Image (cartoon, rainbow, N blue to C red):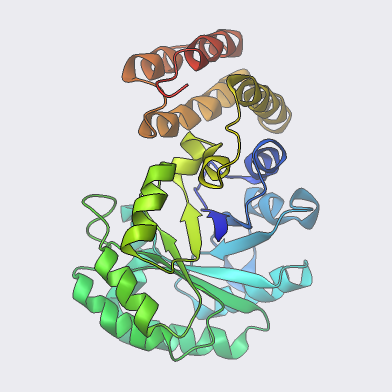
Length: 311
C-alpha cells in the first residue's frame, strides 16, 4: 500500500509537511497545495516558497497546479522540472465556488470539449510526468464513464479519484461503485481519495474495493497525524508526541508569520480538522478556539490531549 498526504490550501504548507514527516511520517507522497500560475508560469512569493527545493528536501513532494490555461500549466511545469520535480499534478477536483466560477478545478469538468483540448496541449508540451486528481463528474456520477474514456487517451502518471461530483461537494457518501468502475476500466495507476478519517474507514474501503493499492488522506490525516501509523498497525503516537509536534509548529510559524495573532489563527485552524476525527469532543474544540494567546492555546491543548475520546 502507498499513502499520500492530500493538498489542503493554507494548511499543508512546507512548514507543516516537513514537521509532519519528522514526527509522524513518512508518507509516500506529499502533494503541494495548488499553485495558480500567472502568465509565463510565474508564482506568487508565497507559492514559490512552498515549492522551493530546499523547503522540500527529503520529501517525496508533488506540486499541484490549478489553472484553466494550458499555456500557464505548461510554462509552470517547465519551471518546476528545472527546479527538480519529476511529476506535477493537475487539479480537476477542487469544488470551491471561487475556483469553479473561474472554470478551474472541478469547474473544468463542465467543459468537456475544452478539457479535451486542454489535455491535448499540456501532454503535448510538458516534459514532466503529469498525474491528475479528479472528481467523477460535474453534476451526475454517470459522467465518469466519459471522463475515464478521455483520461485513458493520455499518458497519465496516476489518476487520483475523489468519487463525488462537483455539486456534491463533500456531502453524502462517496460513490464507491464509480471507483470500482475505474479499477476495471482505467489504464492508469489509481489512488482513492475521500472520507478516510480512521483506520476502520480504510478497512471498510478495502473490503468494498478489493485491490485498492493507493490512498490519499486529507482532513482525516490533518485531524489525526497518527493515522498512517494506526493503519499500518504500528504503535500510536502518544499525547507527548502530538504536543511536541504542536510546539514545533508554533515555533516554525513564529519565524514564518511573525505576529502572534497570525500564528494563533493558523494553529486554531488545525483543530477544526481534529474535531472531524472524533478524537476530541465539541466542548474541547470550543475551548481551544476561544484562546486569546499562544500561551493560553498551549495550556489548553495540553488539557485537551488528556481528554481525547480515544486516548
